[in-house]
Picture (cartoon, rainbow, N blue to C red):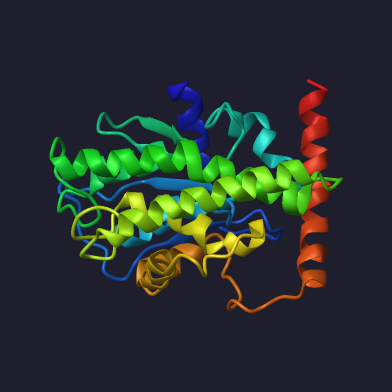
Length: 287
């Protein structure tokens, strides 16, 4: 495994980082990148797409000011199922990350929550967006990260699917997952109502907040309003105003300024995605 990852990493670190198609590796680094305690620059490559899960990793990398390369995967051609990527993430999902570990050999990290934990454990020595390991707030952050991974992401993801992408409208599925998404928003609302900082845990933005922001920001795509959750709405505004969050949302491609879309415009976008989602389902069922 290490040998195969080394070959992939070597290819991705070639000096020329662009080619003539859209399969491009871009290099991102915040202007205020600091020298790591190990006195060596990280050799991170992020494999991603600008989804609510994908932006978690890019937002954290930007918040920490770490230099990194990014490889944008093409869902439309099932690139995430190609053998070279399955060596990095056997589940064929984004985001995934490769880095040079402390022993000098490549390491792969997959699943967005695992990536967030890896990056703060290894690179956030100053606890910019984390707390000291073993502290009460450390474990509270872990609670909310697991809550997002097991609840908000999967439930809102299903709301997205049944509301936007399913080839037929199934009202039970729509109501079930929209209702569960709203319930989970109410849990965040209650937590934020007790917060004096405006963030989920303690006195700072942490990976608990970072794990949730992409999902809450796309609430309307799931057909769920946040108007009845004033604390959550304020939290989202605060998060979206952070420079690192703004930059992270622009990975791998710069996003157009948010604008109100008609249902017809939303349906057009959903129809384009629906085609490759159904293609993915067919590809999976044929295995």
